[in-house]
Length: 233
Image (cartoon, rainbow, N blue to C red; front, side):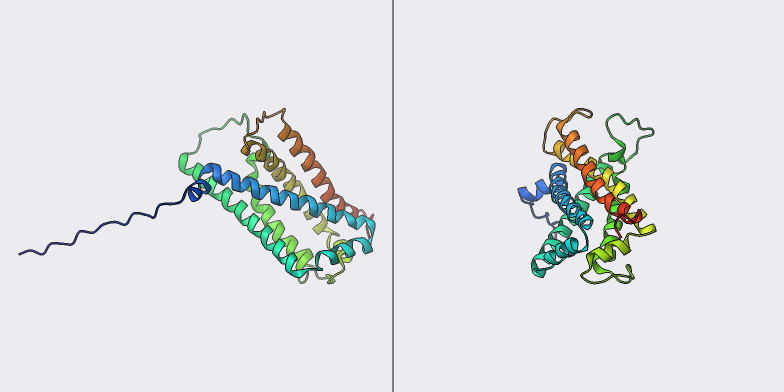
């Protein structure tokens, strides 16, 4: 008698919940990207307003820095939440890019951009560069040494003035130009993701994105420019 091989049954993957299917769909990923972008845009606005206190002098911005560090547990909770939003933003972008590559594995032989702006086409470049800048910025003005050799714990004014002088101030300005492209397209895309009618040239989303981006970018750039021009010293 010949031995009968046992019948092997392949396991079916466990069915995913409706929420899991939604979050991994293109619509769900766009929502993750949009909502995390809202949080990060709000933080960017608040951070810019806080930075502008450097024009009020050392006492004002140092008091602002001390206020932020008054409750360390709350500060770290906010930091963890922001890092999670950055992680979700990056995950959603990578997952959407992968879905697009699978849907069209062969690239176009030639492209004619009718609707896509330069800001949208450059997101793959500005995103990673901004991530690298964020890491440098945290090491530079939050951690301090050795990235900022003249760093003084608790003296925000001193750290900003000494840290943004020279080539580092120029790097900050260039990073804010990249932020402008990324932020402008991101805010406009938010309106499209939410299903609002968005014409390329005349729309509420485009106007909001433009005004928001200009205000935030100019606010950020004003600080390193003032340091380099020795208006703030």
